[in-house]
Length: 485
Image (tube, rainbow, N blue to C red; front, top):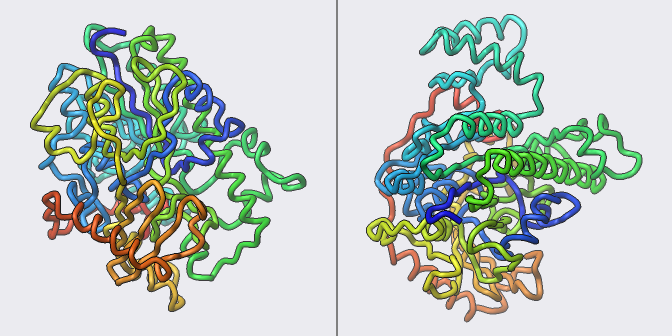
């Protein structure tokens, strides 16, 4: 390895650990695990993209970096991982397929190049409205959006949206193509930090047929599978019911999406090999959060902190992480920034003092974690947004109108809500988190609650009282991903 290796951080958006660690579903990840290091107990700081990526970039939890449903932007007060790499002489490049991880969202800070893969020509106009309208309405929408901002860039992006994108196999393929082109032209005298978000496993689940047929029950056709309703908020409200067979079909489609991502990951590895960079690279593959596919009566990735949402895959390959090892310590997403700085030998003591994460690099002198914390600072979508899009809500849905925090040790997980609710799970006896023991073990609840309070008091919380405006085009894109406004 060179003194400062390349670092490639790949986020498998919306990918839960159990499916990602199934070698039949993800053979590339399985091969990386055989040769690298697997953190078998890695947990996200949050159950959805915006706050989770905020933690990946800053080494801090949602309450500290302030990017969550009540403030939908990563502001500039904290140093970011790409900025620290850039200041250390690295070329820093990012590619995102998730609209939350965008220039408007503040995630381009520290990158010399930041590519929003839903656009051919990078433009502030997201062209989000064109997907959701038809006929004469589409013509009016195109007219509005084409002449908003840079008309030439917008026309190009419209053509790209309807012609080029329709001929490719999703954003993952375009992302890897772009990375390959960038590697051909980059300055080979500098190491690089590359971030890439692949969004394939996110709703809607529409994997290629060649993947889907591997995971569908016998007798279920691809066409029939795609006809199963994928409406998480209608399902939550009880307006859509799904039987066990339909939920199995959706889980099969979801697993096929992970297989599709795994195929892109294999090609990314080949691209790095062909560019002569693989031997000088540390590759990190991590999920930002998981997914509920009928788990706990829910779909999508909101309103709870069960392991189906916060237990994520984490695999590192290259350098000190070679060898096929398993790291069984508790690991949080906030631990990745100090770990990756250790990979590159970047000191930055002032920045490290602001991290709430600790390095798990083999050469780091850090104690193992006694617990990890996950936060759900505010519901997304809000109850008002659900009411606008779904209609009348059953009374039980309003229980989700609260924030949540979870503290997890080796044995127990306590989930505490702003509404005064608590759940306690014995993780050894009940790994599926189906039995709430909070009423039976009050001493354990009190001890974990005190530990959570001590953690909350240990850092300065972000002041994010002001609202963040999101333009209409980006709002439409977010709604297509299921984030109701």
